[in-house]
Image 1 (cartoon, rainbow, N blue to C red):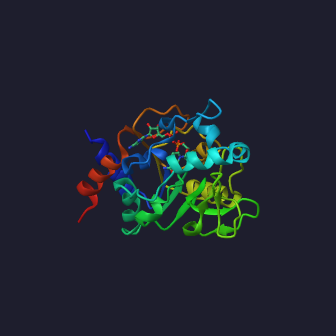
Image 2 (cartoon, rainbow, N blue to C red):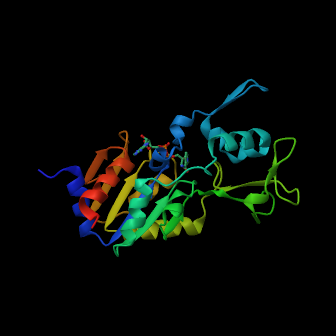
Image 3 (cartoon, rainbow, N blue to C red):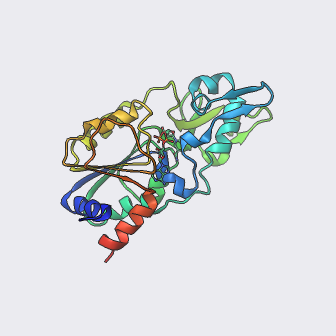
Length: 248
Ligand code: NAD
C-alpha cells in the first residue's frame, strides 16, 4: 500500500497548477504560535481579559490603541522568524516548472522570504505598515512608539499594521485572485488552518480539481472532502517528501 508521502508526491507529479492554502499552522515550526494557542491578553490596568480575536479587531485598535500595539508587539513580531521546510517546499516546487500559487491567511511574510513568487495575501502583511487615517504606506524602519504606547511614523501620524483586522473587509482584488487560482487548480493543499476564520475559509470551496489534500496537526471539521488528509506537522512531512521524491 502506498504511504501518505508517496500518494502526496504522486498527486504533485500529476498536477500542473497547484495552490497551497495556508494558515497559522504552517508557521508554528518557524516559532510563531498559531492563533488558537495565543489565548488573548489580560490587561492589569483595566482588570479585563480580552480574547485573541478581540485584540485583533478594528474596534479594539480604535478603543484601546495602546493595548492593541502592546499585544501586537508581543505576539506578532516576525522579525526573527525564518521560513521552514513547508514554506520552502512550495518555493522550490515553482523551480520544477509547476504553476504554484500560495493563498495565505498569514501575515508573517514567510512565504515571501522563502522565495514563492505568486502569493495572495488574504489578510494583508504584518511586516508592512500604513498610516491610520489616510492608509499611506509607512516605512517600518521609522516607526516609533510614543510615550502613550501609540505607534507613529516620522511625521507623528498614528500608523497600523497593513493587515485585515476582525471587523474589516477583505481586499476584493485578493479575494477575486484567490477564487480564480483555486478554481483553476488541479491540486489544492490546505495546510495548518482550523478553517474557522471566515470568509477566508470558504475559499477552499472554489476548488473543482481532482486532488484536495489536508496537512494539519489536528483534525479539522470541514465540509470539503479531501482525497488525502494527513494529521502531521507540515514542515516535517514536506521536508521528507522533498528529500524522498523530488531532490535530484
Ligand atoms: P488557527 O490558529 O485557527 O489554526 C491553526 C491550525 O494549524 C490548527 O488546526 C493546528 O492544529 C494546526 N497546526 C499547528 N501547527 C501545525 C503544523 N506544524 N503543521 C500542520 N498543522 C499545524 O489558524 P488559522 O486557521 O490560520 O486562523 C488564524 C487567523 O489568525 C488567520 O486569519 C491568520 O491570519 C491569523 N494568524 C496568523 C499568524 C501568522 O501569520 N503566522 C499567526 C497567528 C494568527
